[in-house]
Length: 303
Figure 1 (tube, one colour):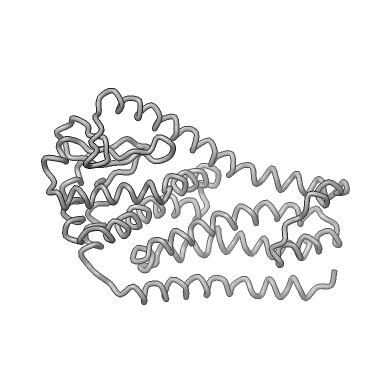
Figure 2 (figure 1 turned 180 degrees about the horizontal axis):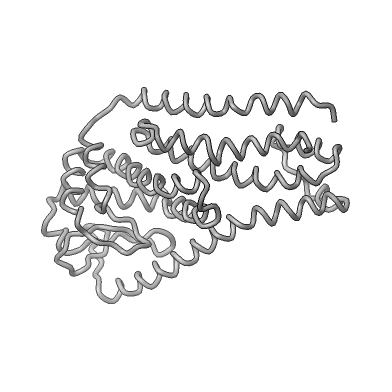
């Protein structure tokens, strides 16, 4: 086997198997959800690139493989001129990489398009049956059940049921609205689409299996943390309790939902911000050290 394939092979094992298992079991992930989401996103990106580079390194000649390895280590992508002057074997390697990379990329685009169609249809219904409230900066829907949710993307809007307006106190309603606006501002629907795409393309992969469960929950927690900049913990927790039974479209983010009990407990249990961050960075660093022997082995071979 071409020894330059060791690094992408190691990255596949690290980001597809080892790191996802560590992060899925880590307590710090729910305490610092933005750091955990960054790890999941980085794992997905690196895994996709590594799986694309692996077949290329398998078919390239020694000299071309060495040049590609140098580009990987120096994070220096090939120029357009280099791509236009590839030889036959290099063209094959480039085609294989593009073919592998197109699988998760096309699945990601399909999910974005599908979710956008659902949101556009739902936004059309809201324009007919809902009314915009300038004081709330949200669309109010006539429904006795308390619910607050948002439609992200181009048709972005926050939706509040009349039941929520009557049930929640002003502080609770403001907390729920801040939570939904955090989803919109953070473009959280993109990470959900990416997690769903990986689950569809690599269903048995720990990165896809654990990420598909962890990412939506972490996004809710990240939105909770951002909402807490504008409201109190009691207001947000009691709002979640009141909205726990509410319903929202599948393509929307809801303030309540099945994760409300876990998030309420997290909101009402303060923690020291420094320690979870340090534990998270230690987890990432210890997993990254697993790559060191492969990098040394790769660099120790001539050519």
